[in-house]
Image (cartoon, rainbow, N blue to C red):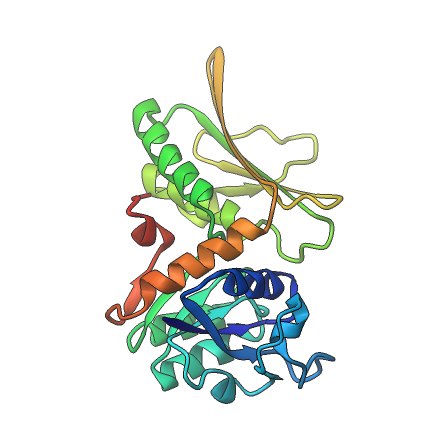
Length: 266
């Protein structure tokens, strides 16, 4: 039996995770966390998905993590550092799916991974992991004279841009070509916008209710390749996070990836 706490329990992803837990026979919710001003504080977390469990939503991470094997964090970029620090102090494994993390949050992740098993990923889906793997292999086969552009599309309410998944795909390109973040070109405008061979174009599109589309365009002389992943339901992210939590339970302290969970490099 896996016991889990969910940070950001009443949010969009939190509710999807609650549904995943409700559908699982070997997973038990023991804690639910929300920010201090949440109107859901004190409510039964299970009632949010029509399954009252007697687990009250609280604002204290120490309380929420009691009895948990793993905490799954889909809270907010500002709340994640506190969740991660509390998990490290309690010896609770941690899965982080929150995106747009600050330097403070990244440092909290690094420190926590010295004490607990920790997995942080901007996208928990199997398909995106396969996309990253395919991109690495495609870059290896093509060489460095193909232009690379990354285009991501999300719903109008998404706060961070570019998406964490787009940045992860950019990391794959940069590792393959020995580039840095200075080589990323975020959009183009003006009368002198010619690209250089080394730059990696990054484009963020926002509109409607798009769950998440990511395309890597590789353009050569006389031909081009497009690698695309389209998420049509956020449930794949919740399912992936819960799968990661099951895998993470009992692991040695350290920083893990979705690739480790799935046995896919890239």
